[in-house]
Image (cartoon, rainbow, N blue to C red):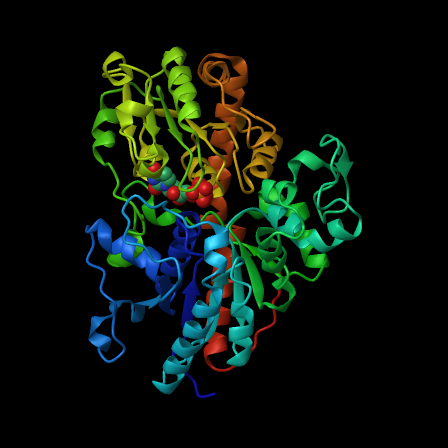
Length: 501
Ligand code: UDP
């Protein structure tokens, strides 16, 4: 292959929690002189357009002048049709895995055609960087004889559990036999050591082995060995054992987290600011007025409460949550996504006169600028569903957590938080259990008023320093630089071997 410009086709799984970190990685690549095509599915692209805050236009290949360009590297958006496109403004932010599965054949064909078009136009992809949840992109990369770099947006621990699915099936641990005591421990997951059945992520615990969802997860973690490397949005110092163990299993894992430098308190470089398309990847309109409301509160007094982009919470639970917040005496900023309203109004689902009773002390948003909120000095705690992005964003800003996992891998993430001693737990053990107001009140009171809360707060400050060190001058920074160098080699047709530090 002739010496071409380095060009990465970056393809996230189309949900908010997966788009966010890959958009941050894309910025790093652009900054390092790599051209990037960022792939959206039609559904997420339409949501971005509907927000109407940014002018996103599909950049035609015939018009290279339309590319965002900085430091010589170009950014382009590509939109692939899917089966779950919707114009419905009240649709969930993220489509379910089952819905997504129906789109895979269509997406595969369109990705194939797109890569062919790039080749025909003389600007071939040097590699595909795609989400672990898009394992079939490995086949597409193989058919063009280019490397696939896998991107995993959560912890090495969860990856190791997913990687172990065949072994867990073989040993009869999965599907979980009925009557299993979830407190019993299992010790076959690389690098994790003995862990409780209950710590296996919910998707594994609660899906039967034959369900399409289970198959989806099984497939997702089956291609790591074939990829050029598996980038993990975690940190070496947090997960050294698991990272080493995965490498010994033949998975070329490199941690590169937290990819959060670009929004840090006003110090974002002008290069980063340039890429409007990647700075505005929020799929819903953000309520920025909550930042002004935060200005009216004392330092570290407000508890921020959000369950991310995907978790389903019943109206009954929202009420319990609201009562618990009210009883806690702390000021609070609560996010309730529009799709949780069940076609009702906010005042219908909150307790009677809740807004009036808590005027001044409470703010409720449909969707909030979370990263900016966590940077605000008034925020003293974050009650979270334990989505991994939310955890990293909190670590980045040193905000201590109350963890209340509900779905996906959130229970496993809570296990990590407790191991790292940076959260108070509201562990409901099972996803279907209803959250109760007393639990909310007690957890908030512990965080703000008890010595245990003080310990969590100071531990989070340590983790903040470590997170900044690793991405600014430590292992994650080194791994990112190595990635950029390797993509440049790939552009000349080389297949650089993965060499862990
Ligand atoms: N988020 C946001 N505003 C909100 C709630 C969430 O911008 O009101 C962002 C948050 O900053 C994070 C992402 O949405 O980057 C949620 O990802 P996470 O992994 O925490 O949870 P998921 O949505 O995948 O369950």
